[in-house]
Image 1 (cartoon, rainbow, N blue to C red):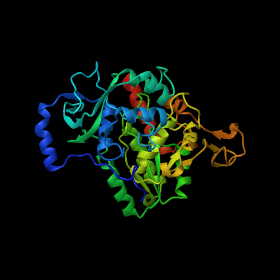
Image 2: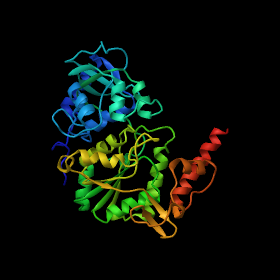
Image 3: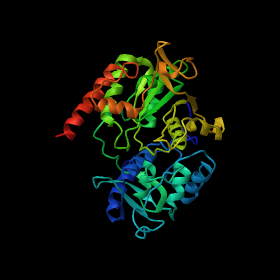
Image 4: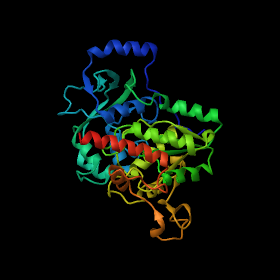
Length: 389
């Protein structure tokens, strides 16, 4: 099976005596509340999903990622994984000391061994990572909410963040690797999504299944935009698709607990490297992967893979063009395979579909499976009723 990024799957969860010792210590430590993204990040680091990271980035790694898309030692990495001191210069935190990291309900999740405290230029970070400083971009909006001093150092998780949903679908990298071995899969393709799966997505996945052993549908359930379909509704959509349209012996569903950055091409590389840690050998990279609005070109997420040597990324990207149902062909196709004009194509934007659902209109079966459409219609009916009193 494919090796973790950097060669070793990181494990930063305190066990037995170490955990007991940290639990006794935390009451005497300065405390730092984590926001939703940081809470997701600490868990991802601890379970090895962000290998080789063992904690939040120090200045050297941070600057190298911004400028070179690599960690300081040269390993490809495209997204800064950082911890903000929140307000001021973080004067209450001293390098060389420990900090208790606190979750949203006041519980101590873990401890940071603070190695370095450093000031950053958040506008420069936005320009280099998000390729924009436009405040309509959700990633720029996020940067406006955090302080300009970052805290770097390894973390140790004492307890997992509290999850009240999808417990049966929360598989850590070690667990997905065991699952793949049990299924006898040596090549596994990951599909990243933050949306319900429509017919074009299904087409891409089944094309990929023609050349690999198994498919991992790995929906992101961390922080997303308010207009995105809620995770519990999406999970129900995935369930009916798996029950009715997918080969059960060749597919698996597990959630991806990360927060979205909406960083387009850089996030495509990040998503690939993390899926490599989960044991996937391939990843589907579609049109405008991890994009938002019109901030990135439709295939920028494909082009960025050309900046890295195939063997240092290791996981194989599977690039797909925009897909649609062609009425003349009578099946799903893409611009690479269909000779007919756009007038024959059924391809709806996410915005268009949301507008249809909000009006109580059923999306056409050429766009989405009827079982999925019913779930989405029901969700929008209930939401409209609540909004209208």
